[in-house]
Length: 152
Image (tube, rainbow, N blue to C red; front, side, top):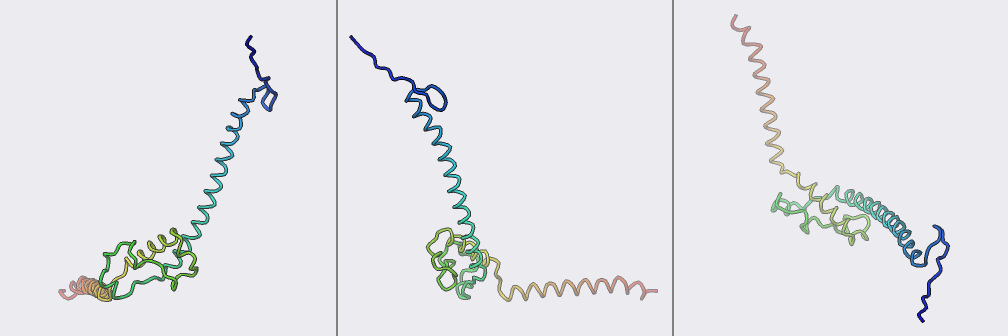
């Protein structure tokens, strides 16, 4: 009447298994191999990204905004402004101008170098305050040590 065809269990690495179980074992082997491959690929990307970041920082170290632009905007420009964008004249490797990691890092570093810039008047005022402070301390010290000797 009805004949039921059964597949014979086959002997494999783990013992007697059916052919369906072999397909499951492939998944268990494939997952760790895939994870190891992804980890290696991620580590290579980070190492490459780190060298690009170092190059961008070195290139942006000597960046200065033009005097007219700096006086106009001072501290109002965001780092994403096109004024901080790298150009072929200031970059050692022009192929990096198309790399988004390089451009973003360059902009951030260029922004940091110009954020702390001050005018000459700022430094004159600061130097004057220091001179006045030192002179006041000197005069106070003279008054403290000389005044008691004058009275007596």
